[in-house]
Length: 159
Image (cartoon, rainbow, N blue to C red; front, top):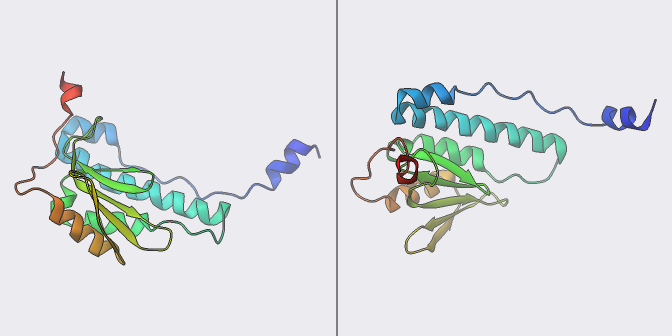
């Protein structure tokens, strides 16, 4: 057996990729459907990454982004905004495309199992909490009164 085949024989098998929602079809139906499709899409993607990490780097802590996404999706005020992640942090946008129109702030899941909540403007750490539900509650409090559901595109996309 040659070295290339021998190396590939030692590669751990990753879990199968999840079947994702049809984002193009959701986008065609409008922003409400796109936001509704984005939540499970984001959750499925992060669940897969978490499972892959267990195989690739067993024992290495993975930030609790999956429970964070589950808790955020269960909160109606947050659920109507477009979710996105960057460096594990969850943000919410009132637009469904770049550049994001970020509302409230963000939540960063930490490798120790806790969560840091940050306000966007003026930028500040609001606190570090023990549960995803607490973090989501704090983020929901940062949303402005009358926060509208996501719109189809950002100003830059419409220009």
